[in-house]
View 1 (cartoon, rainbow, N blue to C red):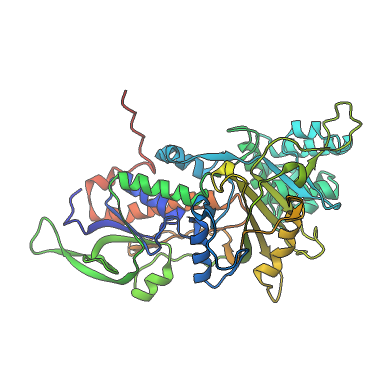
View 2 (tube, rainbow, N blue to C red; view 1 turned 180 degrees about the horizontal axis):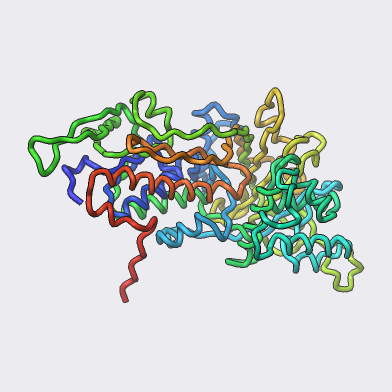
Length: 525
């Protein structure tokens, strides 16, 4: 492709969140000239991976609650931590994994298999949740009749036909999932709760049946690809590291990166055409702080519509329908003990001659999810489930002997909304009460509490030819397994919308774009 000069681009992408980073990499690999900007000094945007010092700075800048055990003293070994601002689970089969493989970005990162999902019971103990027929068969704490019912339900979820067309579901699509499990498959309350909140990752008792079933079917089919769990956790803070991998791929294909500089102005500028001295066309001019040149591009892709609207109120932007939002309260706690499975939870006997008594978990595990169903804590929320992700050295997120605890809780039908700290302290205390340090209670090295917003999925409108600023769709950030794949799906839509806009230049090379990811080059012998 021909360009005017080094400051002229096909596309300027604003923000290095996962959606924007995947889009930038795809456009760059397709042959477009891309400039990728972010006013933050790190990659990943709202999904960034930060050291502890960076996390404290990020939280203080936004007025979030920060509690440090050592007061204002520097946190030791801060740079050995990679804390995710968007903790998530990555299904082993799905859009993100497909993008990682097809783009070649998978070679830049590593992943840890989620080792266990457990749910807290009425006795206050965490119990591992069986996720396969083999797990159910070995679990002697489940009555035989309940095993049969649960196996029948899992077989229903894994059937070859469309679950939406099944007889069992007809007329019950919008029924609360818990009610569906209890009435259609006769699961008892405890088992239905474990399936809904720890396998299908429902948020509340009112979650509808069809979406929950589709999620659960997806997760069950993801099991076995890389191991017994359907989920992966990325190394070094997961999504922030993955976003940086896509940025690296974009840079290899020629994309230009400028981080840590504010956008100061945006305007439409007339640019002389290469092949004519008398004709010109209009491009966007973007100026950034402490940078001498104005960057020019035919198309802007942005993660922040507010910035564009402030700098250029009359810009032609893609319009998204309003989405339903849910407030999510989050906690990030860093503790100086490793995950101790024998203290945290027990697993039922496998029935090998021990009278079905429970035995402690002795194997070494590092990365687990703990689920608190609604009303499972007297001081917790009654309308929503809290989900806890604990990880440490195994995911390259913390130094030896340390762990990171992420807690996520949607606030549903709660008025007035309590603070994030008030909402999540009971759950953090319940987890820490299972752990000890030299026979003493564990006190976190660092706690950060804040509120986030999760957007329900939206149906994107068709892009019109007048639109030359594309805005990344808002993401559903809760529950843990949805964020990564939502970002990957949105990035593919943005890519094709961008190609549609750029084709108006009647460039023959643009017409040849037929794949989201071109075939990878074979390595040389």
